[in-house]
Amino acid sequence: MTARSPEKPPSFEKALERLETLVAEMEDGSLSLDKMMAHFEEGMSLVKLCSARLDEVERRIEILVKKGDTVATEPFEAGNGSAAPDRDGSANADADGDEPDR
Image 1 (tube, rainbow, N blue to C red):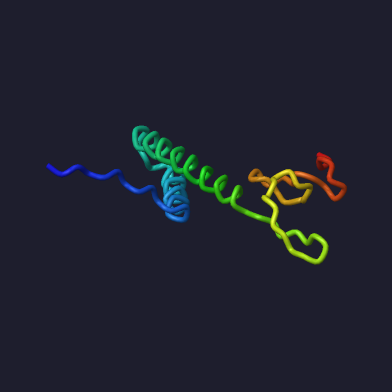
Image 2: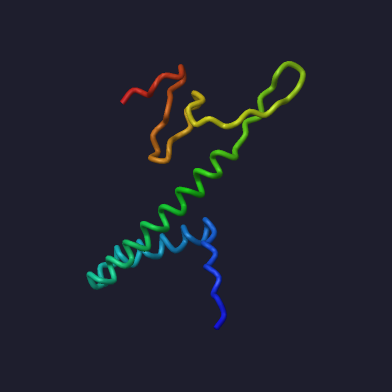
């Protein structure tokens, strides 16, 4: 009997593709309740995997910063005052660095 090695988790792109398939099948409305729950559970684990991958990539991003005559790198910080949207699509700061008006 050979020991089976644990399966390698899917790539971010494959996980996202599978998640989109699950959602489409769930939105179709033709699944039984048991199948719907199985799709939901699989989807939640894929969301967790994708979120972890995005967090990992975010930590690895570095912003080039010009310091005097040299260019240096600094770790990316999500709260750096840029108006880049959060994952929920909302901007995390406006032009003057304050929280956006809502």
